[in-house]
Image 1 (cartoon, helix red, strand yellow):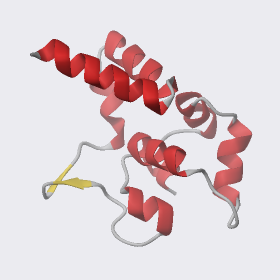
Image 2: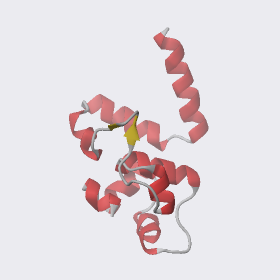
Image 3: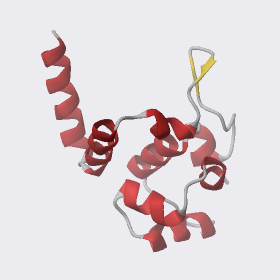
Image 4: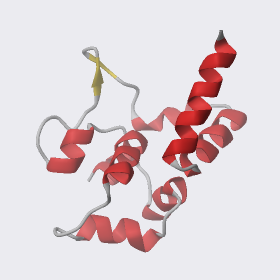
Length: 110
């Protein structure tokens, strides 16, 4: 439901998450096994939904930050080509490398 609401195809979601389309399809169909924790976090971010709702079905579907709704999942429309590429490459990185890159960028900001 969240993927369709975001207007993203399984193929596009698979590309963004660096998995196969069949993995996305299986997550949507299966009531037994879904994506692992890290993938759920990534899914929630991409689809613009609350992690708790995605993982459990409880709580609000929409994601909030300090009481203000975050931009809808079509945020990628307002990004530049370089920003889109940077985001795509970042999402394809392992979590530890993402954290290291974020730390590096924080240092560069100082």
